[in-house]
Image (cartoon, helix red, strand yellow):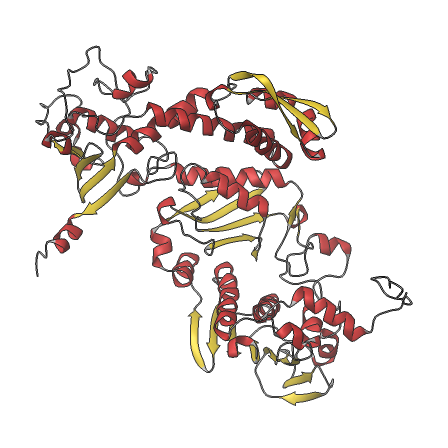
Length: 600
C-alpha cells in the first residue's frame, strides 16, 4: 500500500527571500495592470509639482508606458536610490506618516514596477546642466537630453512574470482603464494639464482650467446639466462637489468619484452614506453619479491601509458617514422645478377638498373644505375617463390667475389624462404629472415630519419566530434592546446561537419578519442606531403613503390639480415618488415644434 504524502510536502527550511522575489511579490500588490503603473507614475509627477503631465501608451500600456512631467526633477546622485524599495523623499518620521499630504509615500512603486518590467528614468533637476538617464535593469547612468522634470518609461509589463501577463484583457480594455486612471487625477487637479496619447495619436487632453470647466471636459456637459452642487462644512470637514439627479442614474456605478484630501478613494462608509441619501429617490438598482471632494485634517484619516492607497480609514467613520449623507440629502431635497425660477405661490393651503383627506383620514391633504363635491359616476368606456376637462375656475384666492400662474414652476393645470396624468402649462411648455406618484411623495414627506422622534407600534406574535443567529447578531440583540423596541422588534436571546422574535412592526404584517430582524441587526452592528431606526421608519411610512395617495382613475377638478402642483413645488424630493420613479416630466415648446416640424 502506497504511503499517503502530506499535502504540504516535506518540511522546508525557513530562509530569507531574494530581493528580486520580494519586489515581485510587492509588485503583485501594487501593479495589477497597466493602469496601476499609470496611477503610480502620475502620483509621483504630481508630488514633484508638475504643471503639465503627458502619458504615452503603446498596446494599451502593455508594450510601453511613458509618463513625462515638468516637475522639480531628481538630482543625478539620487536616481539610483529612487529605484530601491522603501526609499522616498516624502516622509522621514512617524509624525510625517500620520500627517501625510502627498499622493505617494510608501517608496514601493518604482521598485515594484521595475521588478516586472523594463524601466528607465530620465530626469533633470533645476540645478543640473542636463538630464541623466538610469536603466533599472543594468543600473547604468548616462547623460540624456530633456528639460527640467522627469520621464519614466515602462516597457514590456510583466515580461518577467508571463503567467500574470495572461490575466490582462484586450488592449482596448487596458487602454480604457489607463484613460480612467488619468481622468481621476484630472478631476482632482484642475490646476494641472493632462494629455494621453496612444500609438502616436492624441486620445484625450484636459487643459488647466477652473474646476467646473475641468468637470465639463472630463465628464461631459450632461453631468453638469443633470447634477447639483454640494457644499457643506460640518465640524472638522469640508464637503464639496456635485451629485447626480436621480433621473440621470445609470445601470453601472461607473461615474462615481470620491476624493479625500485630493486622493481618489473607494470607501464603503462614504458609499453607504451616499446610497442612503438616495434611498427613497432612486428606482430599483440604478446607480447615482457623483463627484465628491472631502477635506479633512490628515491626522484624522489613515491613508496607509492598502499598498495601492485606494482605501482609507477614518478616525471617526460614523461622523464622516453622517456628514456625507446629510450633505447629499440637502442637495437632493430641493425640487428640481425650483431650479429654473422661484415659486411665487405662498406656502398656505387653498381651501379645496383633497382625496387624501377622505382616503387616509389624516388631514394631511393639499387642503380640506367642509363640503365634498359630488363626483359623477364614471365608466371605463367613457371618454371622460380618458380626458377630463373642467371649466377654468373663477379668479379667486386659489386660482392660477390670482397668483401669476405663468411663474409657477409646474404651471397651471389644464386637464386630466387617462385617469393617471395631469397636464399643466408653464412658461416652458407642457408639464405631465403622474398624480399618484406625486401625491405619494407629498404624503410621505408629511408623514416623515409628523413621526419624527416617535416609536413604531409593535404587534406581538402568537408563536415566537425562533431562528439561528450568528455571534454578532446575538451580541447586537443584547446590546440594542431599547433601539429594537423603538423599531417594534422584540428579540430574545435563547442561547449563544439562537434568537426568538416575539413582536414585529404592526404595519408590516405578512412579510418575512425574520429577514427584517436580521437586516436591522446588520444595520445596527455596522452603523449607528439612529440610522437603522430612521431607515425602518421610512420604509413603513413609504408603504402608508402609497396607500394614502390619490388613486388612478380618480377624477380631480382643476382646482384640486392646481393645489397638488403647488404642494409639489414646496415639498422636498418631489421629483421622485417614494420608490424612485419620476413624478413629472417637462415637454418644452421647442420640442413640440420639432415634433410638428414647425419652422421647417
